[in-house]
Image 1: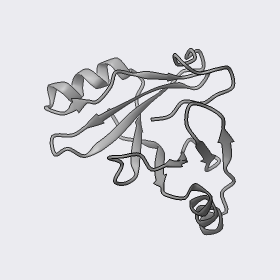
Image 2: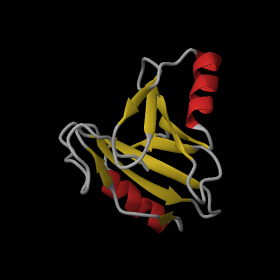
Image 3: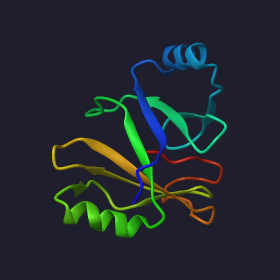
Image 4: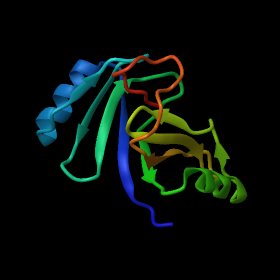
Length: 132
C-alpha cells in the first residue's frame, strides 16, 4: 500500500484567527460546514486538502490522513502490525469513510477511503459534514 497523504486537520484554540493565518499564509479559501461540530475545509486543487476545527481535549497536533482503497483491510493491517484502531470507520455523507488509528508509538493518524455513496453519519442532517 502506497502512503499518500490526502488530507490533514489543524486543531485551533481560535478558529477565526487560525483561518486568517492559513488564508494569508497560503492563499487558501475555507468552506465552512454545518454539523455536529464547527469544521472549515480547503482543497489544494488536486487530491489533497485540509480542515480546521476547534481543538479538542487530547488533540496535540495535526492529524494526517492517508488514502486507502480498502479501509477494512487497512484497519486489519494496522492491528496485525501492533497499532490500534481508535474507532471503527465512520462515513462522511457523499464523500467517503475515515477511521482514526495509532501506530506502535502512540502517534495518531487516520485513513480515508473515497466513496460518493457513503451514507450520512448517525446524528447528522443532510448537508452537514462529519469530521474526526
